[in-house]
Amino acid sequence: MKALILAGGRGKRLDELSSSKNKCMIMVNGRPLIENSLDYASNTDINEIIIVVGYRAEEIINTYGIKYKNKRLKYVIQPEQRGLVHAMECAKETISGDDFLLLLGDEISVNSKHQEMINEFKKNDIFAICGILWVDDKNLIKKTYTLVQDNENTIYRLVEKPHNPLNNYMGTGNCIFKNEIFNYIDFTPIHHIRKEKEFPDLLQCAIDDGKVVKSFIISDKYINVNSPEDIIIAENFKK
Image 1 (cartoon, rainbow, N blue to C red):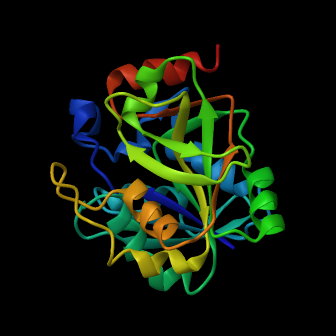
Image 2 (cartoon, rainbow, N blue to C red; image 1 turned 90 degrees about the vertical axis):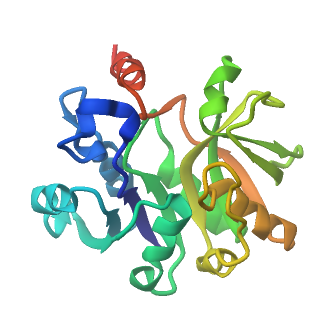
């Protein structure tokens, strides 16, 4: 298994903070944002981390080189910023047939359990597992995605950025996939508003094809940093 970190976007909602800097290199709690995901991957038994870079790619490549802690690093260029599914597709050849842990380069979790999620994935031999958490404030879910599942944590439906979340489960960018997930990219529809293929829609294609996708409580707190307000929330995590 490999780890795949997506760090190719500009992050326009961060305004001047990302105008001259890769979004994932913005300092949060005294360190570049991407180092959180690098640490999550480094604290597992995965031995190779692939980073998809695009906007100001050299900033990440020159900072981290070919190794982070005890893990080998490789880089993939996303020539156009066309969303997460396109970024995943760019890394298909480099992943070279392996299953993989997906992480986003702009997220922070508290008390994360990535190795435990990997163990659960391997033990049950399932197609994919989505890292989620239970939140009291449903407004947080409107920024990510929600899901419908049964009592055995089998997911049947995912909804991207729901206007009215059906429950208190909030999806994150932390997921594990069988390599065959790439087979469903061509079947994933392009979102009519955002004009790109959406991550939950990719997974829904696999679910609709009969693949078993489970959920896993990945952390106590989570934030995907997309705005100056999100940075404040993330910094308060440590207090």
